[in-house]
Length: 335
Image (cartoon, rainbow, N blue to C red; front, side, top):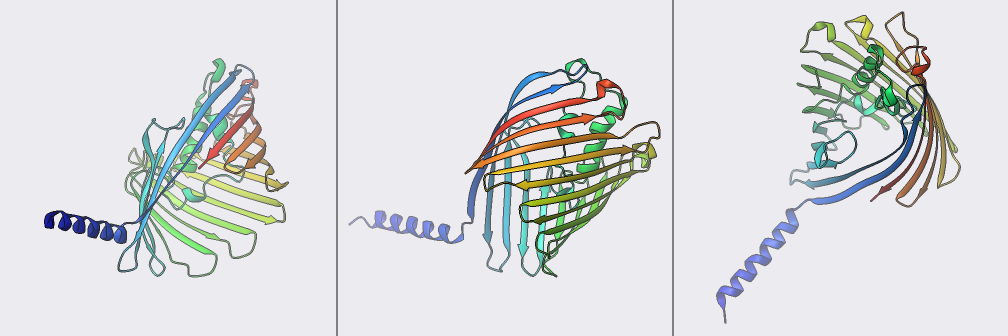
């Protein structure tokens, strides 16, 4: 009898047993999409373009002996706005029913305000900001401010290396959180507070405030205020949002008002229409306006979406070159 072999086998079995008992659960999910799209307008005929984006998310959690749950999430993103194969959103959180949730995050989506900063129409302006000056058009000072200012207003509270705390449920349907980032993008520090109430069937109301203290001078300090409300009744959902970016420099102020209505035709088909209106602190500019209608068809893990959108005065100017039309068709797959 080979005692050594038996001993090693028993040791290996015991290690597997211990490992199985203490290991957390791990899941893998992902998405991929293919898009064909076209931009058209004076000086901005970009022609038909094709693009692809994909991401993989690793998520895991385990419960400690003291009842705390530790969770982690890492996203590998190869989308248009990320370096292929690089980490995008990533976070580690510790939570319990009695203590709430402590979350440490990197990159986007890590702020109390950023959790509610998307407009009611779904950030239609993003469709056009990424195409500033296409087809020979020249980005103006105001247009550049739109592309950077809007992003600053709607995402500045989602800087790297931030900390967020969500209170335990004190009232059914009420969630309250606070966040702090010692080094946000272009900011020395930022903090935010937000709350969401969903205690009435079909109704969701969110409100958040934040401030950024710039390391480039007090003239760039700013306050952010975001509110959003939506109500679903039967197959119809209506939504409204208002986001304000109040800068220490008045000419950098921005306000975004947005509305949308969605109709669920069936379990597979939905139709959505939304608008956004941007205004600035500059008396010499006009409002930039965006609108979008989309039809989505879902079958299992696949969604096909057709979009038609329009941007007017996109650099806060009435010049013909600042009006752009867009259409796109996307096939997205999730697993």
